[in-house]
Structures are given as C-alpha cells and as structure tokens.
Length: 166
Image (cartoon, rainbow, N blue to C red; front, side):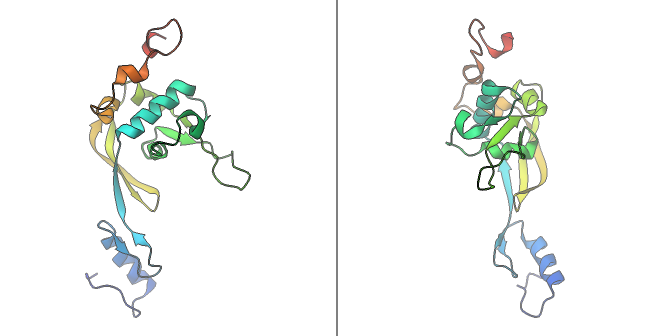
C-alpha cells in the first residue's frame, strides 16, 4: 500500500489495508470519516488510586463504581485492559445502558498488594485491547510521588493498623 489517500476507485479491502497501516499515527477512515488511531495508554496514578478505593470498599465483590469511587477520574474502567478489574455485564440500567458495577479481580488484588507487576502500557484501538507491553510496573510506581501507598491502603478496619494486618 502507498501513503496515497484512498479515493473512490479503491475497493473496501484496499481501504481497510491502507487504514491498518496508518492507524498507528491516526487518520480519518476513508469509508466512514471516523478517526482511526491506536492509543497507547499508560497505567497511571488515577487508575491506581481508583483500584485501591475499590479494593478497600468491597475487596473482590462487585460494587457500584460511581458510588464507591466517585466520578473524578473516570480512569478506573481502563484497568480492565490489564485484567485488574472486570465489569458485571448482567446488571443494566433501565434504559439498557451499562450500570457501573465492577469488581477487582484476583490479579488486581495481587497488583494492589505488591505481588504482581503489569506492563506499563495498553494499546487500544476502537475501545478494544490490542496488547499490553512496556516495562513491568508496580502499583507504587503507578501512584507516582503524588500519592502515598501506605496512607491509601491503611487503616483497613477498626483495631487493625493497616490492610496488611488482616
């Protein structure tokens, strides 16, 4: 395929092949005019704070994210790309939309407790995961210097100093 933009003479097959080659940088689809781009998403501090809040609230049980985490970052849903959280798909709003019920997975729990590293980046195209890649990342490094891990994790329950005293 060339760098030449498709015109009306190209087949759908040719246009799709051209789009696959160009989507890394981002380009308008010649068929529907939608922006086609692969997004490189790092796991970040907003995600790390959200998963800690989820874990402290309900451990591995499903919970209503707008209630337990709040609507500040809206980053928590992206944690699904690393397999750290999962959505309850059976629960829907009255209008049929997504209800906002998610849970921390066992893999997410391992990451929260410092027992697992995950690749730093998720590559997303059309809201679908293509791959995760990059340097292994801990929850502490994802939190960065703005947040204190120990402060976020403890105290867990009355009479216990931290979540780790369970």
